[in-house]
Image 1 (cartoon, rainbow, N blue to C red):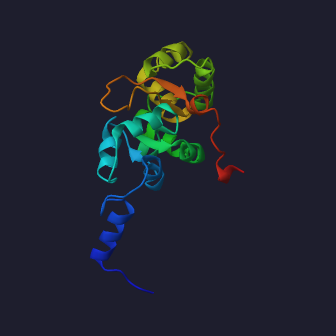
Image 2: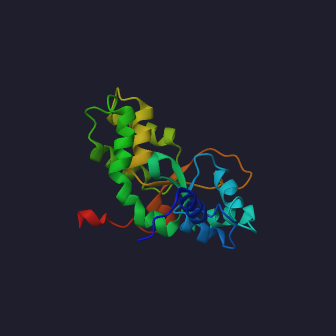
Length: 200
């Protein structure tokens, strides 16, 4: 077996991340190859792809968002990532337990006594009308069922963990500033997430 030295490992990592040399690759393929891009700040994916692709046009990525071929959603580390529609459908359920634990890591005391399955059902029921909502709007719609629980804790748990959501365009479009409006992932993509294989 060949043992790679530190420099070779470093170069292999850079190449795998498309950072050693800019690639001739469509943006959709690059997002899939990278298993998503950090997108907590809406313009980050544009810089990330410009750094990696030879002929990157920002409008192409904006088009992919509008066409629902890529989405902005909470996933790894509970931060917003840009992923292909196929990848998010395949991976989201696998992240459910981690997302719940990450939110509970911040709001465990505030959410003590809240039945998370009941909260998830209330969130899904509210979002079933297909209308996009801000986190504050969603929280206001369910908060009367949990008096005394801080709205931020309810909202974070709903949007980041319990109900798989996407952040809708124009949020995340090139050179566009807009607030976050959420819609369930299944509503936006017209498909449910794949079940977690460990639960089958």
